Amino acid sequence: MKPPFLDTNILIYAFSDDPRSVKAQECLANPFILSTQALNEFSNVALRKLGMTVADVRGALSDICLLAEDVLPLDRDLQSLALDIIERHRLSFYDGLMLAAACQAGCEIFLTEDMQHGLTIDHGPQVVNPFV
Image (cartoon, rainbow, N blue to C red; front, side, top):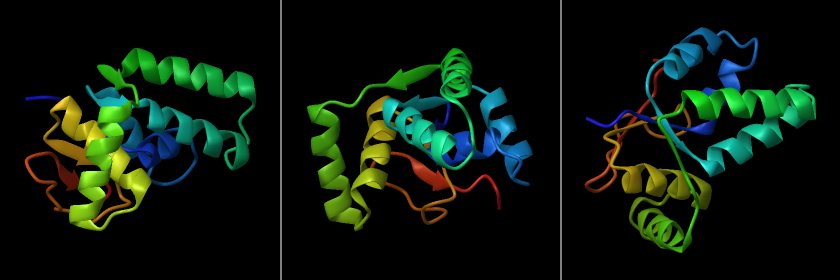
């Protein structure tokens, strides 16, 4: 069984003082997969809202990538799959792109709090909210 795919909010909580940070850090302590999209979104939020410096973000990204079993790049095939997913499931483009990466990775679980808990994407992952 493939490790779960992590959404950006897990990364953000893991590096914040939010009450959900403990659970998010547990998610990072176990094998996981993510995409460059999550790293980009994390960097944006870390710089704008978490008050991290560029050096802090570089360090966090390095740590995250060392812990990750795999980091999937974004490409044309992934974008095409994302469009199929958003058309069928009426999701935002960026949520569809993240789920497409989880499908491409072969993950059975997609950890996030931003989508409907229990939603299953075609023959791909099931959305699981680790904070419930």
